[in-house]
Length: 239
Length: 265
Image 1 (cartoon, rainbow over the protein chains, first blue to last red):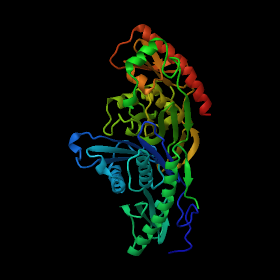
Image 2 (cartoon, one colour):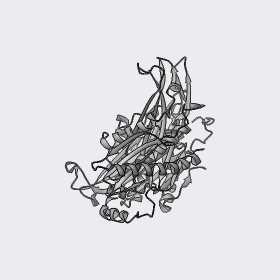
Image 3 (tube, chains in turn blue, purple):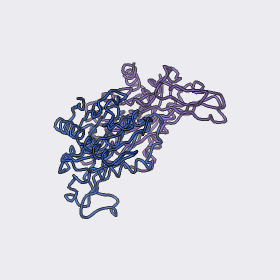
Image 4 (cartoon, each protein chain N blue to C red):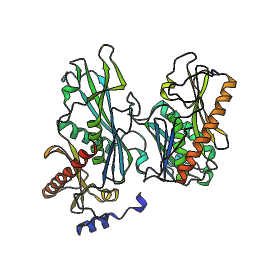
């Protein structure tokens, strides 16, 4: 690893952007939360468990987790046309997969749990912020969970492993360029979501996941604190 | 939420004795808070809370070819999303009538009032103009989303800055906004919706009040000049009721206008 690599915003290699979380932001929802990482802001609202319509999609053995990830049109520089895209459809599914392992869906057969995620402001890491917010919102809704889920992007800039890429780093073009590795983990370290975009070897990837685990622990602390203090903005992540 | 909604009949009966459940007067808005600059990648943005109703509005600019019949005028588009985040009643999926009407009514109010200096959005006549997008997302629905969104649109537009634009390359540099505000005239076209419940007229209903309403009329005006009206829902209104709606909207306008002036300096 290049020891003298300097990050554009002066962060340490293993230093996340400042994070903040708040639970209980949408009064109508059964559970809701905000998660902010640097300039990325995600809102999540949970409705349910409630009756699953259409009936034909009901699972008689367990509840269905239905996540909808959406970037609002002005959350990025070039306006996004409102409505679902291929990208948002995939991230919605990834979010369901990231969270389902910690839920006890069999407790609510035939029901649906709807999780709506809106990215209010984007500066990379939006799917991770969305998952962090969604997991808190589900906990806030009082839906039984075996453990918490936390999510962060590990990454590699040229040959250097770093945690939590921001947009400027995602656009990094020197050497081998950027590798983005969003990871979600339960608090006991089980991986529920792993994606990768770029170029990396096996050892580096293992190391990157370790780095994500450390960051997820910090995120988990903030999520926990926010859940204990509904309505209060909890900050963290800074060393 | 539906389970705890107060019976519509009760609301109408109570209103008949001149009272609203939260003690407001018919023309009285709930506490209004306006925060601007809430989403940094937008050219302008605002978050508006009206009691528990919560909306976020953003302004984006892009360049486009002008329409043939207006070679020196910019384009304008308002779109709204009744986000499923904001209410258990809203569903994902293609826009249905309520959301289309929502965007169109606000669009007309802003467009027809002379708020926008269309020529000021021209970059090169016949070749390139700015398209101004105003996008509305609801965050929590406790009634009167329409008026909250209209206030948000004005706040976002009044605080927006044009991005840098390189005429040679045609590239927009969103990261370096200019100091130039949007080309706007000195009018403030606020839309106020009056609702008919029983035979009473009120403004700024809560969700329960809105559910009890059988008719509504949205009045877009600036300083007494009305530039857009939309009567909605199945029930009719007498001419006296329309007159009362206009009076209430007038009173509410003054109140909201003052608030807007104070909060978006």
